[in-house]
Image (cartoon, rainbow, N blue to C red):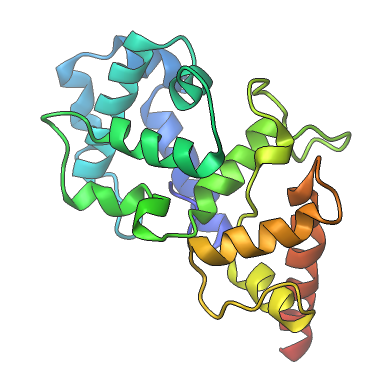
Length: 209
């Protein structure tokens, strides 16, 4: 959720957040006291404000009191597809009397036609397994064939230029269209092409400058 802006800033803010959790985020989430939360009252990252941080902590504490892992919470009793799972998880995330309206913008959902770029990237990391340590493959209850492409501006632009994408908006419908095209190349692992599309877009942008 913090992954927007410059990479150095993202890494620094994530490191700061973990340090405020004493370097042990899971233990902090499940064992903190109310007084421990005071250390987050000045934590900010762009539009991510202290109230958002406190609600995220509240959610994860609730989640880990109900489920052993985040994968269990995301998959539930079973998955039909990623779109349905993302919509269900969004509803679960904000199913609390403590839910803040302002925090909703930080957790995307296909129900609002969002491309859900960061969530799809997170799922790619957790579900896919490769031999280079880029994707961790820690989740084993989701088939990589079900994954949807993380649609950032580089992937979007290159996909339109090479004729893989006709839609002119970076929304969920574009994600579905592009992922379906990529499945025609490899039905078992469509999002592996994310690397090539992103790199082509990044190199072209750097060449311009």
